[in-house]
Length: 443
Image 1 (cartoon, one colour):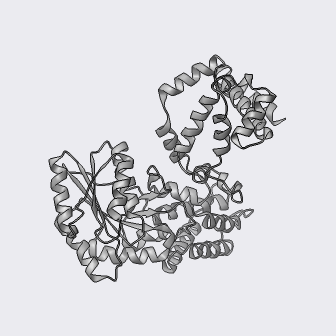
Image 2: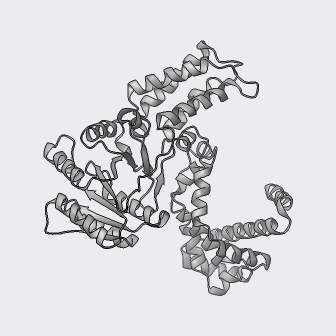
Image 3: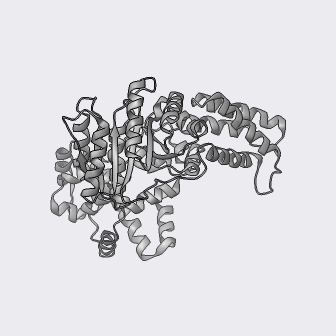
């Protein structure tokens, strides 16, 4: 996500390093490269031009503080302008009223059905809402079936009228059903449609008029770049939607849609999709995204994801086991599963300040833990509980059973022992012992 843009912006800002002050001459080359980076990211030309003009005006109008060099000051200005370009502040959903109706709209293939499920899961688990999903795509084969599969997966009821081909009636009936059955959020999944298809656009306008939703969301595939922005404008002219959902931001997206869409339609990006799993949904924070684009990471989001997976009861059990030297491979496996639930590995690494740049040429496999899991699962119960019982002959059996080599088993054992020692140090001697041990490992 934004890897190419991040790299080019980093090179552009590098131009100012070594200069004692910002001048119109030395800032010109930087701005030229920033504009080129934005255009390569499929940002609208007028937006890119306005952006660089604003940055130039602010950069030349400021004196460089003694604590900052020109490059650092320019990074701050660019970050502030990126944040402003993407909306400034995060905007949440309007969940007012006894029954909130959310209408999903967008092009075919934009990911509306999948995201409807993600949003339902988010509202159910994070906001403790009673959600009803509604299948109003009466055109695409198996669309309603797909929604039913998603609903079953997340434990949310799906309302559908298989024989009814009138989406307006289905939507109105669904809201009546929701009110009668204690549902306080209704998410209506509509058919994908082209903005040039007048009949289909009239249909969604009729649904909108009939149900009067508190939230109308436009779902757009971030990988379509500037086309997504143009389509958003066409939909907004008819629906006057409340916010944008960007899907597939975990893919090879240039970022033009995320950077341009707010300026064109003057509507906030409310959520982003960052993977295939139902948990792969994030509230969109412009400032955090600006930090990530500029290689500063996103520690706040990383901590929030970690906190979501944190189990205080389980943590106490782990602490007791560490204190008694009883921390085993089963416990290690639980820690791995918690990390996996946090999301896509490449996405997580990108949230660590500086890590994205350091590992830009490293292919981070999202299945990186599979080998470790296979090795642990090939161990007997005793071996998992008592790692010291694993001798040479047991290692051969474990390697054969997991489809790995003895060297890989040895490597895992070594990593496990180092981690166990670190955890013990953190409990017993605190940070000082931890630092001493890390120095020893470095040697």
